[in-house]
Image 1: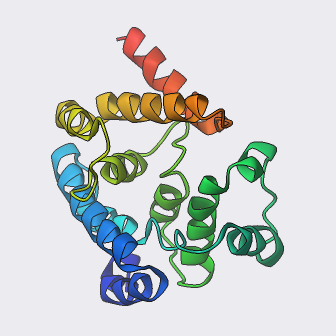
Image 2: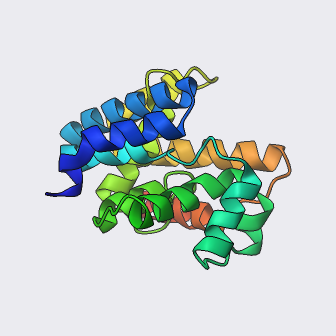
Length: 195
């Protein structure tokens, strides 16, 4: 049985771990991820599974997440990661699906791990989950329609928009920006210039 054959089990897990708002959001991200996967040639089953599980730890308190990451799993966070508790859920989520749920597919694990920051050399699935999280049906932030339009053009165009959005938002709030986000942004912009 592959990880993608266990979606009923994963649905029960996210239902148990998440409040109503975040549960609905996860279903919507899974739906958007499948649509993006279909459009851009990623594995639709993996997209659905990663979309379902991407926020599995989001409703936990920051101190619980930190304890789970560092004390229970021995993962040392960087200074930037420690300084922004909004990054904890993705790191903890990737650990949780691997260690507690027994997910073995590294593509799914990485898509969960990097859905908040992005990173250089993202896989197709990682990009799909990153963008699906931005454009899912429940999203209604300023600029979501523009983001959805960009996702119709290409994943790279949407990634550029998403990373720019995140970097601007973080800098306006005087929050540190994860080096992975800067690397992802630079890679996309430089690849565009080289075309």
